Amino acid sequence: MMRLDVLSIFPEYLAPLELSLIGRAREKGLLELTVHDLRDWTHDRHRTVDDTPYGGGAGMVMKPEPWGEALDAVLGASGAPADAADAADQPAADAGGRPVLIVPSPAGEVFTQQTARELAGREHLVFACGRYEGIDQRVVDWASERMDVRPMSIGDYVLNGGEVAVLAMVEAIARLLPGVIGNPESLDEESHEDGLLEYPVFTKPSVWRGHEVPAVLLSGDHGKVARWRRDQRLRRTAETRPDLLAALPPESLDDRDRAV
Ligand code: 6GU
Image 1 (tube, rainbow, N blue to C red):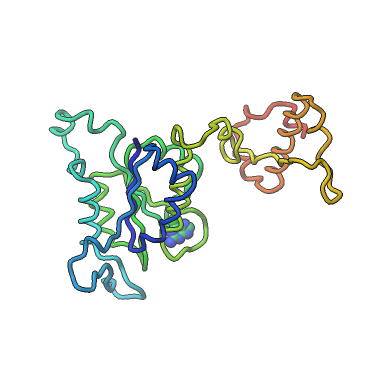
Image 2: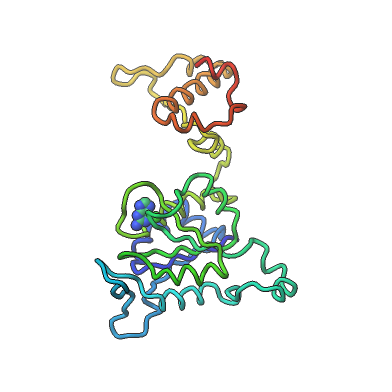
């Protein structure tokens, strides 16, 4: 079972992970997700997690000590740095590879469907939500000795902290895990799975406020319907995301596609 730990000074921000698909997946035992309050690993009266930056400048920096203790706690025995003796003694402990530390940051690599697929195959994901100007760099340097560290952005805009980005990333990853989605066939034709955007969908009534459902969808001709849907996907992608179309491997388009 995949294990996910989220470290944040605003654990209430992650409350939506109790709901809907992810909430049900947790109840069904398909994933083990724990949200931790970083301040549980402070020891002063004010539960301080930040301090002024060395070298001066605006804003505050997250102190390394609470992060160190938090990572020790979520890593447990697997937190020892890998060395030759460990590798010889406990090959099975390494089955899903090293734990992954995902550090949400607008300066990170952009999180895509491919990233989600890749992370869905790992055994243990730890999300370190920073606030303020960021986390002391030594936390990342220390973690790199025992985890695969991945600074990740969810797009080219700035959020106040990593929590909202973690909601998006956890949802994208968790829905790919076996058993989380009722009908896994619905995953195949989604936007971003094969590089094309989705086709438009319609339901009853066949005419609504003067707008008709395209006749081909009422024709009962499955071949025609499939061709129409593929044409729609190609057109939509060319219209709103020409970058996606340009990135498709040439062999994924046939002559009929190119005629659209
Ligand atoms: Cl992951 N964090 C923050 N703070 N801002 C972002 C982001 C992440 N991705 C885009 N903007």
